[in-house]
Length: 198
Image (tube, rainbow, N blue to C red):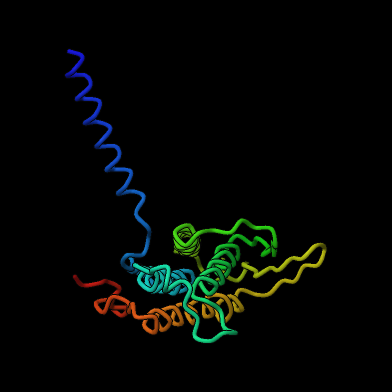
């Protein structure tokens, strides 16, 4: 009887572990289905989803050598570029919540796996916050920078040509860097379709 109970316990535990690993998969292995209408929030959400998909595959399978790669002695390494994209993703997430971007010199340094995961989760959360929002909703969002008592606010327009566009630009750098370091991105990635072939 005890053996049967133990086997049942192991089976249930294994099922739970499998379910947890499935639910813990990182977002943006493919772009989610598109919405039915072109609200302002849906269009911006889709831009963020496109960024998330590009980032997912640009960072999939990076090696330590890739992360240390830099195109010149005075340029950023790939890892430093990924840290910058992570900071941009925090700003992308803050804006639809009207939260300030506060520069924190003492923030803990994340390893590559944590950096990748948090960047993708930030983008997924930001996309969800914007999904279905009207033009009126989006017009209330602000890009806020705060340093001590100094606070600067910008309209959400600046987010589109600022952090979102900047992050897409830097993801392109990651794709170029990894090609130069001898580990090109999966050639079956289709940014147009939003799915990756096998």
